Image (cartoon, rainbow, N blue to C red):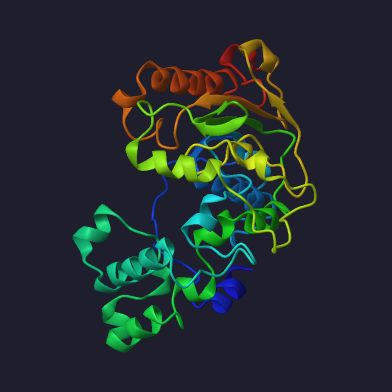
Length: 329
């Protein structure tokens, strides 16, 4: 699979080599709790599916039970209408509009990766090393080819934004499972409220200034009338509540094309007992970066969320009861 995919998309099959993992003991008997933010939550789901599918050559003993729990902070499970505002075509969810914010980002990323300045790449890496678009490898003509859209990640469609459109997420979700032995919890963020039946940003003071306009935009989203809806039963108003980057409906649990088992959590007793195979989700007031960037800005809510995550992980630290020394027969 990996070899076929890399050939089709024009990149190396393998990227950076990590000689030693952080947790070499990782296996079904030593499973891991994962916490993912935004698209990272969907990446964890893809990883778990790949473990279940034994997709890693040389590791035939993997299975879905290597993942004990998945906690999502503003997880991008069902895509976002933000992608269309920024430049993705609602017609196909794959191509970019010629004039858009994403086109500017595309040009900037290509030039950044082409210059391949080590200290800059150590500071921030866009993750395109496997496309080999450094000036050392492709030269000036290769750069021009990438900028013209004939080569590189944006030519192949093998980058994150197509997967974050509603169409792309539906395609991705169609082969991602919720597994019966894994615990799932999701925090869905929302920075909108209804005023006289109209969805608007909920106040100005608590919203990051860079996100305020984006929240307002997303709360006014209208799917183009001349474009077929992304799924049967689609309604614009379902997608108006948002946190500036993702729609709240997208963050609760996988919904499209098939809705996975879920339970809204209003108070702690709503998830007691906390059962595997069900997406428990909580709606929290906050913009998309409130719980990841600045602890001071989020205040006590920041600590409460992470305390609850760690407490939940500790409570479900074992899938099976551990054998203690005095229990050995």
